[in-house]
Length: 155
Image (cartoon, rainbow, N blue to C red; front, side):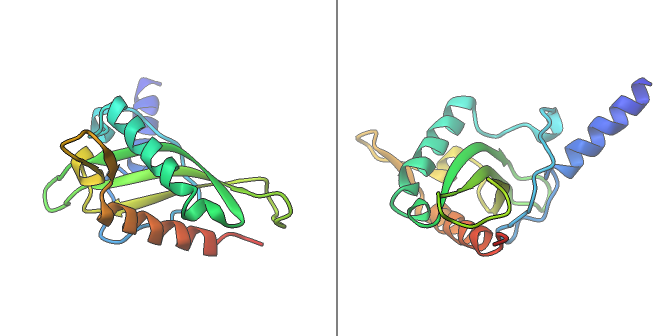
C-alpha cells in the first residue's frame, strides 16, 4: 500500500511540470494539481512568490485584464537549472469571463510556463529606491502566453 502511494505521488509530481521543456511559453490547458516535494520545490520563497503575484496582478488591469476576461493569479512556481535545462517558472491562473461574455463555463484554470526564468531576480526588477516591477522579458513572455490562452478559450 505504501508503495502504491509513493508511486502515485511520484507520478503526480512528474506530471505537474517538474521536468518539462520550457524553451517556449506553454499554454497548458488544465493543471493537474500540485505537489510539494523536494523534486518540485519552488525556487521562490513564499514572500517572493507573493510579491511577484501582486506585481502581475497590478499590471493586469492595464494590460490583459482590460478585455472580456478577468484573471486571478493563484500560484507561481520556479525551478532552477538542472543539467541542460535552464530553469522555468509556471504561473497558475484562473480566467474569469466578464458578465455578458458567452462561455460554456464560469471560469477556466490555466497555466503559463515560461522558460529561461528561474529566480526572483529574473522575474522582478528592484530599483535602488526599493521600487519593484516585473522584468521586461518576463512581462513579454507572460503577455505572449496569456494572449495565446485567451485565443484558445472555447466560445
